[in-house]
Image: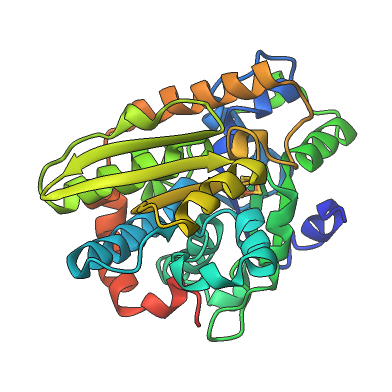
Length: 343
Ligand code: SF4
């Protein structure tokens, strides 16, 4: 299913907001013949404006919201010392696989919605007021590395509106650029909306280990230690770490691909204690997603490295200290059902 024409039909009828996933910014350069892994955040935002979007926001800001919620959920488990492991919920491929193959894990998967959904909710339900619009005047389009993200457009908020209306993959964006004959020199670089400036933790989400790094760093910030947990920045398909945060000695697993996941699950089933496990379906995480431009392993690794160095440049390290999150913190706390899956 290709949604380019669907999105074009929104222009002029709705206030159309594009949200940019982390992985796409280190891939879009390939559309214009650049090396793999170059960060082109501003060029991507400029391109989306040129294509007709009214506003461009950061999906990593949604990842910051999700990290914050997930870290609080994890802290509750640590305090009560039960319910381990906690698995991430942000990978739609993993969630759908778990639903079909491992329904017994249901209560172990975080309740947080995906970063794309969180960014959609905040746009329609909070930014709409700042922009003097009604939520229903806004359409949100995810610019994503993931074909499966299209499945998430089925989810609706309690008021019946969709979190996200359409998803355009990197491949579709490439097709759109080629059809319109756009070259890099035609693009005026632009900043995504400053209210959605993400932290390092939000940007790192798109590469393997990113969710774990974000979770552990945010936990450390919540406990007042402010440690950056970048020890998880490796690329093996299955890895594990022991880390000390506050009074807790944690055993965490990071895995991508379901063959490695099954190996890890066998260990958990046989009684081994893992406190947190990150699962991503795709090679090296979303940078190797099914909606990305097809390429080889070396290029995907460069995208992961490009994303990690982009994350390192962010001023805030964790959502706990991010001014963009502080702005919306009260709204999130009083509308938690918008940002969590119901049972
Ligand atoms: S890891 Fe793959 S399936 Fe999972 S959200 Fe990322 S791109 Fe989609």
